[in-house]
Image 1 (cartoon, protein in one colour):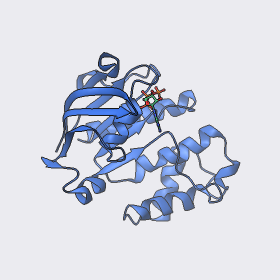
Image 2 (cartoon, rainbow, N blue to C red):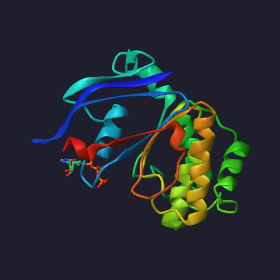
Image 3 (cartoon, rainbow, N blue to C red):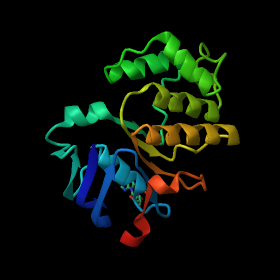
Length: 208
Ligand SMILES: Nc1ncnc2c1ncn2[C@@H]1O[C@H](COP(=O)(O)OP(=O)(O)OP(=O)(O)O)[C@@H](O)[C@H]1O
């Protein structure tokens, strides 16, 4: 299981954010993407998820272009962007049910309740998401990490809005996923310790 990025170039308008960017990530590895505000981290993550078109280069998953076999790639990819992608009128349980059905998963209510409880949301299962705090909303979105089956996680600033306990919890979930042979690509401006021996770092500052 390998993700290969070859000579990628991305622009926003007339501004070239990065070019000739290549990387390779294997099972059991983590990539920490670094760079100042506006350097193109979100653009790169969105490009890796097929949500933004690169000017040049290619992205291969298991040796095949993600454009050629998108159904394989999207089954094995979990993307969490800045937005939590939650329906405010639905409660956490309903949100997670809908979101897992969208990716073809049928997760039982019990499994979702366990995930919510692990994320510190026991007792909030039936509360409409609009009544939750920012950090609680983020915790609902992050509960998806505990129920999805994708090996490749792409996480854009996952630690934002979390308190110290939730940061530690998320850290341990990421470490466990990597230990289990999964792959994680993330950005964070926070100094969160992650397992150095399994981690690659890539700074976009050298591309601008
Ligand atoms: N929708 C858009 N249209 C035009 N330009 C955009 C758009 N989104 C982002 N940009 C520009 O692309 C550049 C890279 O933005 P991007 O969000 O990828 O950076 P980032 O490294 O994730 O930043 P941050 O650390 O602030 O989240 C910025 O200069 C930004 O202004």
